[in-house]
Image (tube, rainbow, N blue to C red; front, side, top):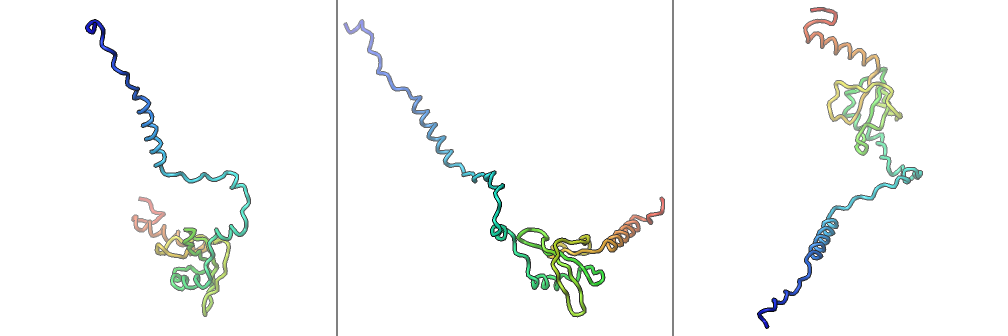
Length: 167
């Protein structure tokens, strides 16, 4: 009797597929939680809202005091280009990372008078100033033309002839 009967089937084991799916889900969720958080995106409607005057004052850097400008000019003023005892300067603003504060300087026998101006009205001096200067100096249009004329003449002398000569 026992020989003709097939052996009983082995007990069925539960499928391991749900276990692997669950493991994948847990690992994926762990990686997502480990990612760095993104900053909140700015609200596009916030740009359209008016800004209060007190907020603007907090954002804007304070202009330099005249005593600070005088002290910096005492050190760097030798590079100023004068026209009838008058010149213009720009003062470096470290908070803004550029020249943002501008002054007209009037030279007297006993000192200087500084007057703030909104913008420079003359061309900025691009020659004869050491790099890293905290002041930006100006020159008149006539002075700029004269310097360009001298620079061109010295160039042509270096090349080996004057501007009008032909080779």
